[in-house]
Image (cartoon, rainbow, N blue to C red):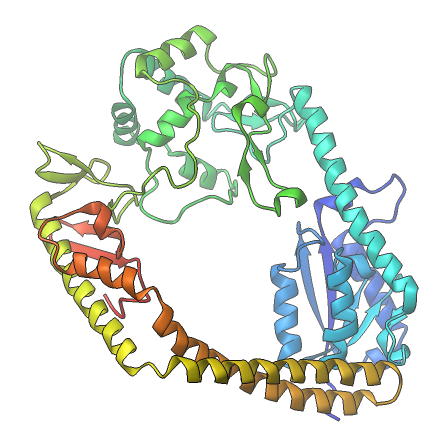
Length: 509
């Protein structure tokens, strides 16, 4: 039996689901969870010998087990430093009943971790090999159903607000701020609104995106990022690359945003359980548009004049994924693609006043690509030469897979013996550790054999053909070069950096 770990972990979680609890229901705040668990610890002398550590995830759904502090806690469990985990109830651990059951029935017992759910009256130490019976299963199923139901209710509530013209996004657009009286109503920001009006006025006068952004930078107008920083507004999409300057795309986004004429546009994107918590773009016909919701920053006449002057429609149908190509030659300072100018003789970044000779840059990149392709070809030939007999490898892989299946069955058999009371927890842990070592070794050998056989089946014909073409390329062809090159970063007139795209073939830059 291994020594008792010295740490007791209090795990707390709060998400948007908890804002939708029935009126009068018990608070799920982080502070309330902490207080409840500390009272439980103080009432159990056997827990007071541990040193307490806290982990909390605020704003994370119970359906998501990739929560940062939950993962940090589990890393410490795997390291053997946590002996007890306490939560307020099962739902704080998670709302996916299958995954919660996996932790309670398999992971915690195997890691010799005692799990306590205060409100559910559950302590794994007192379960004698069981996990609380049908009551636990039903509660976890209810939690999972509650998570999905809450998600649907939140979406339904937001849709109602959107149809009423309420602004439901997390942050107000540049030029506005949320009203102190009603967070769903926008009001002009006295600091940022004049900048928005200036942008529309300059556009209506015929100024181009680049001219407007250059003017704002020359006259030291705070960029949107600088404005957020000065006002302590946190945005998840802030970028660290380059300087915080006005750019033509930022100007364009402002000019074609109808929020500045008093409209509220919601439902542009979806991000929920049904989308796997991935952000997807909704079609324009699915947007919810309501007019006259707040004070406009510019008149509709000025808005239309500006849009007409810059010669672009307010909305263009998005191209499908993959239809747009990233810039190949990129300014390292701002991360934006450099454009050709002066009859194609130079690449230029207007924002940083940087230019490089096109032929000189392309010739240097071409030589590097040809050399890399030649090296990759030699590597492929070497791998094919040293590859073992395919039939022998297939037989060895088949045997290793059978051995792996056998060891996995042994683990289930050991755990079954433990749950039936025929084996102590210490004996189960010891046997499981032995089988786990055999599984890891078998997996390692299997990976090695799979790698060997993959070297024979790694599309040698296609790769060899493409690499041969690249090794003999006599002129710069961006489409072909993209096979190996992700981007060419330009740091200065005489300094470039190639970001390779094919790690399988290129060992080093």
